[in-house]
Amino acid sequence: MVIVQCPVTSKIVRTAVEFTLNNIMMDQMSSHQQLRALVEQLQREASMERMKTSDAIDQLKRYISEHEADDYLLVGFSSQKANPFREKSSCTVL
Image (cartoon, rainbow, N blue to C red; front, side, top):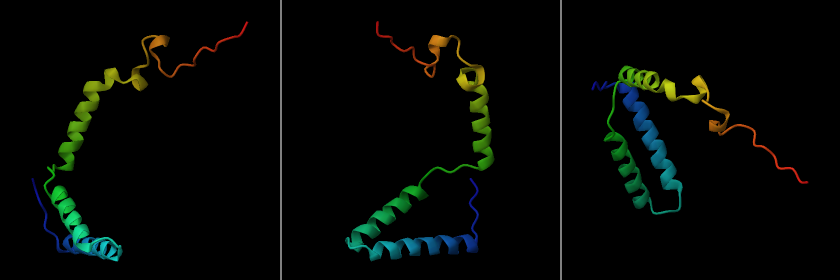
């Protein structure tokens, strides 16, 4: 995993966090509880597994090619009864 340290990006992130903190402090709820919730959310986001976009795209393309035979929008339905989007037959009153 490659992490790029960029002063501009860091400043943008700091500004976003400061903006969020300012919004939280404006609310009437306990600021301590809101700050704790914000820190917990940021910790969850920081602990998420990251991957390169190129790797994610390769995995997505592989998944699509492996499952395209099951995609009804590409291959259609084997019979009209298997199609959940078919027009329902209406009942007639005699």
